[in-house]
Image (cartoon, rainbow, N blue to C red; front, top):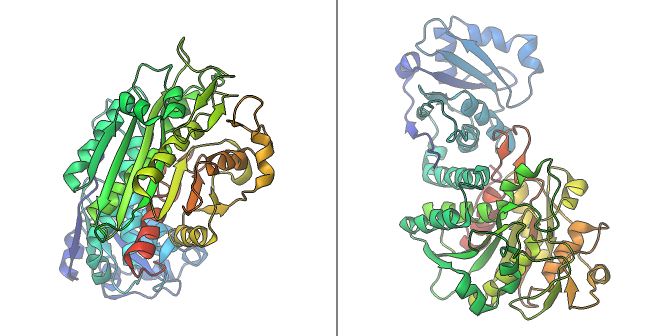
Length: 493
């Protein structure tokens, strides 16, 4: 798995600045004010920072943007990175500033001079998220990243373990979502989750025979055409009060989606390695909360299947029976994710009786048409729960937008031969998919469905990551758990 660079928090040592190799990152506000460490860099570079601060170029820079001074005189560093950041800035602006450090990080590491800047912990997290890369299948040799040394940031030091845990969770999700399907089979995915036992998670893997006994026949129907066996993995973290009902996170884990008999077009089908993005996010959250020792009870459940065309594959027109007992007419075998989720969601409620349940899935292309790649679609049966999650997502800078549910959409799911169809046609496609899932949510269960089809993976680099898997949702869900179930008082940074 990808390995995070080491974090090293040190007291302010002005002599170390001149001797540091690699990158030295320093922050200046719009007025060009410099703290003690920045003034030392300015003296070492014979006034270069002062000249930059007085230049039109610096005045036109936005927060988080940087200027690179290469091979500065008077310093051992290869690069001085001068980043514009207001002293009280936190959250997205500070993370964007930190991302400049992560982007520049190499084998010699970086010295980050935080000084008087308040958003140090966001700078650190931004750097850790941005320096991620996925190069394990390239034949070239890759060098390990050097350490990130943080000078003069006591508030960040106090949360260093938490920041690393969050970054580890995001990196784990990105690794899973980026993996090709011939590597990340359902078996390999389950094995990687079983390895999380070392962090204190309780892991159970349900095989096909057990799923059949439980009645998860909609989930099993999706994987009938694949050589790789379908599985459900249950991850339990019991960090809260003994016997207290957990929150449940449920993820769609279609390790590859051809569309089945309703075969997708060839163009772009290679992207369907990311159709397990919901399960990847659930796995990343569970790793993060275990690493930081969350004081909450959380259960993560993922349904792992592969949707392939085969002589045994389910057909359009088939009728399958869910664990709940409702029957589903399969109109389109490419609407498979909801068939996986509905069984796992019902199982989660039957077994754990969660105080709240959130499912995540790369479920519909329709949500991309509605919201693009900036926001995840949020659907909920509970206004308070939806508000709490949306607040957490906004605080973490992870775009999310609530879309409606309503009985009026049910008529699109009406079947002639079964209790419902698995697809409601083109109009309101992401809403009817959520409306399908809502039928498998008990009245007493507060629930959110997150359609991450547009946010789980991107075609171009983002502020905090390279192109490919984003790890969207790990930060928002961790904050939602922290704020709502641990009493963790987190500020907007």
